Image (cartoon, rainbow, N blue to C red):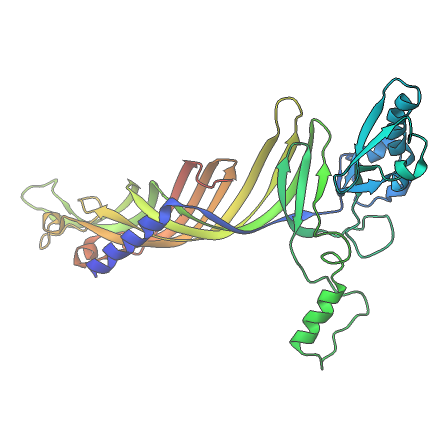
Length: 374
């Protein structure tokens, strides 16, 4: 039994130096709302210019030839062409979407066929939903996020879209047919651009908040444990000539080195703040609830064992190992974490039989820096 304990302690210790998170999913909508008007559905075409600057729709960057540019985008190119027409510049050089150079000079500045070859990279609103309307709906999809400069890039998770009203599955379809049918309907991942490089373009000094869930596995330590009151046998030596056995209540705050493997479900939110001049900032708050399994060492002493006339505490002194298991909750702010745990320590070996807290519940607190990495 002692060898089993040592093997377990070694395994937990070796696996306790790294922390992993799995299946981190942000809830992503078609837009970020900075209007703070408690409205969660907008028609893009009905928004004013000021409102469009505060309702940031999911976008994509694409290269378009001159004829497909908007009036405002064409005006930027026309200003450079006018410099050549007015002989302020001898030439200007543009590129097409393939990266080929297009030189505009006095000989071809009025040749529309040549001008139509000029291309520009522009930002367009991405339509990720399976409809032709411009409103956003209330759909929220799972995806990952990457913050770089003023762009918050989105990578959607593959998914099977929800059934439409009145769309019932036929009982005679097998699993492969159902999967093929769902894939055909999966406009988010196939027809509606979601596998392209999509992003939100954040204004300066604006904060976008996204909620997420994930699964977490990490190593923890619980340095402080409170063991509840329990009865133990003791000796009353107030009268040296008549020592008697009595029952007393004992409780204990223990501090010892213990390591455990903790795994559970995490939920929280991340705030992405774009700051043009002093750098972006990311803040994360999250909660984790889960189970832990670990081990610790306990030293027997007079306050945690029974002392009787036939079995004095001195005959039971020693140190033994325990297997710990229970529940835990951890609150994290970026790299600072506070955890509350409750569990049971089960002693290993014959010596542990004298320990009055064997198999009894306890409460523990853990405080750490970088306990859960972002």
